[in-house]
Amino acid sequence: EPDEVEIKDSQEQEPLQESLAPEEEIETEEATEIEETTEVSITALPQGEIVSVPGWDYTVTEAKAQKTIGEDTARGIYVVALVEIKNTSNSSKQVGSKLFKALDKQGRIYDMSSMVSLEYHQEYDFGMWHLEDLGPSLSDIVAVVFEVADDATDIVLVTASDSSNPILLLENV
Image (cartoon, rainbow, N blue to C red; front, side, top):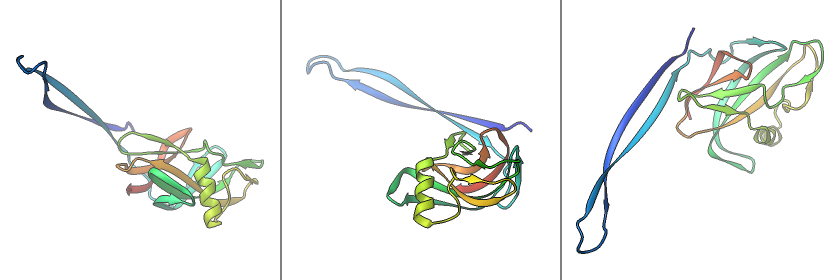
C-alpha cells in the first residue's frame, strides 16, 4: 500500500530595506521565503504487536520521551523504545545499532543512538545491551534510543531493511 504524501507550500513576503546614504533614495526589494513541509501518512501497528523480519521477531513493550538519559542531554528529545526481541536464527547474534530506525510524520528518518542506548542500559540496569550476543531461540528486552526533533509527531519504529510494519512509539514528544 503506497504511503500518502501531502506537501504544503507557504509563501511569506517581507520587504527588505537597504539604506545607501542619507541623501539617496531608499531601494525596496521583495524577498520571498518558501517553506516546504512534507507530511507522510503512516498506518502503524499498536505496541504489543509482534513483527517478524529475517532472523528476528520483535515487539515494543513501552515507549517514552526523555530530555536526559544519565549524563546525556538531547538537543531535541530522546525517544526510548523498550523492544522485546527474539533471535529466530540458528546462531547467536547481536541486535546491533543498525537494525532499527525511527520515522516521523514529517518524513524524517532517525538512526539509533548507540551511545545513549548504552547509557540507558547502564543507568536503569534494564534488559540487555544491543551489542550483547543473543542465542538462537532466546529473547530479551533491549532499550533502543533515538534523538528526534522537538516537533516530531507520529513516531514509529521500523527495521532498516523493512519499513512495511511500523509500530507506533509516540504520537507527540
